[in-house]
Length: 338
Image 1 (cartoon, rainbow, N blue to C red):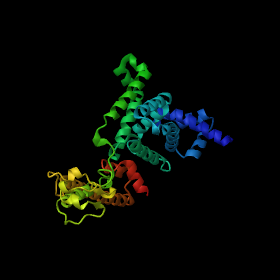
Image 2 (image 1 turned 60 degrees about the vertical axis):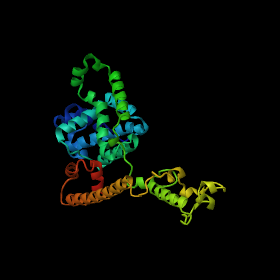
Image 3 (image 1 turned 120 degrees about the horizontal axis):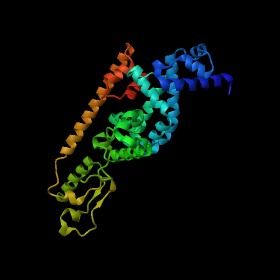
Image 4 (image 1 turned 60 degrees about the horizontal axis):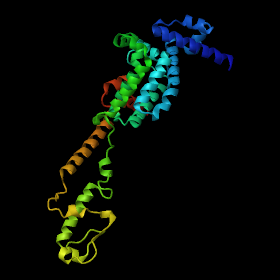
């Protein structure tokens, strides 16, 4: 390693220890310089200011954390929480840095080259795939799982007051949080689960061969042909002439039905089967498609308004807060970056 690289690494280690212990306001550059064996001017020459040095330290610490989180993308919620608990228990500096950031900077997160926003956008997308959560609630789920994994470590005094001597048993706390996460996900409300994309109702076959509307149409056609020998058949449906005259004259083979227009004959001959193709299911599906189209149009309108506001000086973080509950922050940031 070059001497300059070794010096920079020493600075980063010293700065991480200082910021974790004293926070952004309480940290002193002269103590960092002394611990790293350099002068203060070198620190300002490399990083510009104490604030910028804090940003570098926080992002650098988060990058190390991601090396642990990435392999968890295929694990169940319980293991996810347990591994996060282990990491924060063994590496308390990241949690402390995040708490100090919250105290000193409010809600606006500082970033470097967009890495932080992109990182959370990836976590957001992975949560949807990994846990089957609807996009509207992916951020809430991550907050819940992360809170389970680290809150007892972030507030040790409260943990002691609640658990007493049992607060020292970290394994028991870890086990409880792990099983609680699993139980919560097993009983995850259906309204929070991932929904089928627009158009999925049209694309999903009802009986494996035909959609519901085609099934209903074929049913009506089969009923007509079973009672009227003059009615022309749909392509793909072949009935013997004797079968059209009634069961007494049916001496030929069973009616042949092609796979493309397969019909449940028992249902088709049921006098109680609905004849009107515009059933409640059709009407509900039509309303859903109309609502989805309206939602897409509204989303496009909101995206255009966000871009216009951003172009006139509104910050991405401010805009994300203003549309909270409609678009997630990672989605807003990506939208404005495109």
